[in-house]
Length: 357
Image 1 (cartoon, rainbow, N blue to C red):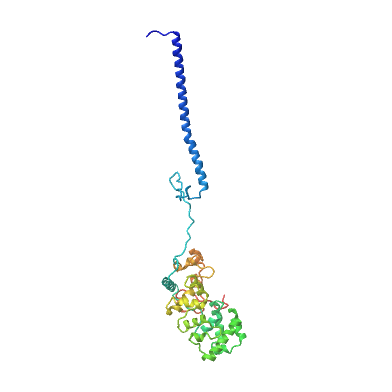
Image 2: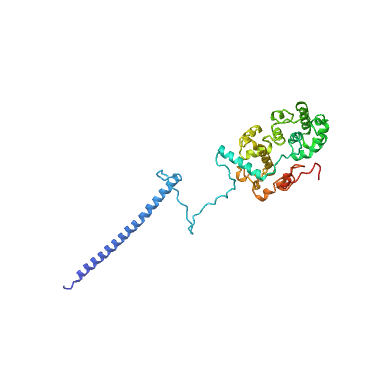
C-alpha cells in the first residue's frame, strides 16, 4: 500500500481515540452493573431478616409464622462437643411406700409383714405394768391414764402393800389413797375410780375381776382399752389395746385413717387373725415408745423403714437416730420394776423404784 498523508493520519488517530473511550466506558458500565448486582442480594437478605425478626416478635414461642407448631431448636454445643445441661436438684431419700392406692390384699400383706418384723425386734414384748393378779393389773391400767407405766409401777407397790384386795381398797380412806396416788397425776379422779371399781367388784362380782368385756366396761373408770389389757394379759383372751402410741403408728403406717379408738380397733383387727391381737398390741406399743416417737421418730434406726409410708418424718441419719432410742434400745432401764425373765435375758434392765437416785 501507498504512504498516507497528514489528513489521513489525523482521522486515523481520532478513530483510535474514540474507540479507546468507548471501550473504557463499556468497561466502567459493566463494572457498575456488576457492583449493583452484588449489592442487591445483601439488601434483599437484610429486608427478609427484618421481616423474620418482626414475625418472631409477633409469634408465640413454639409456633411458626404460619401458625404451625415447630420443634424447639437443640441446645448449643460447647467447643469441646458437650451439650450444656441444667444441674438437677439433689434427689431426696425416701422410703419404699405403696404406689398409688394400695389394694386391700396389699395392705393386709404389708401390715402382717410389719408385725412379723416387730416380733423379731421385740420377742420379749410384754405389758409394761407390774402386776401379780388380775386385780392389780386392772387397777394399774386405770392409773396409767395420762402418765407413764414407769410412774405407775413406782407407785403401786405402796398402794397394794396397804390395800392388797378389792375388799381392802373398797373400804379405804380416800384421803390416804389420794396421798399414795399423788405422783400419778389426776390423783383425786383416779382415787374415785379405783375405790369405785373395787366396791363394784365386791358388790357385783364377789370380789373377783370378771373375764368378759361387757362386764369389765361397766366398772368405774374402765373402758374398752383397759378391758382389753386385762383380758389379753390376765385371762389370755385376745384384744387390741388402742392407746396413744397404737393410734399414732397405725395411722403413720396407713393401716387406717380413722381417729376414733373404737373404729381404729375394728379396722386394724380386720387385718389380723384374732389370735394375734394381744401380741400385735405389745409390738406396736413397744415400737412407739422406743423408736417411732410422737415428736421425733428415729427413722434412721427403724427396722421397718422400707415398709413405712411415713419414713422421713423423723431423723434419718443412722448415728443421730440411734441417740433418740429409748429404754433398752438406748441402753436405758425399762419401765417395770419386776420385768419378766425373758426381758432380762434379752439385756433389759429393771426400772428403779420411786425415790431412787
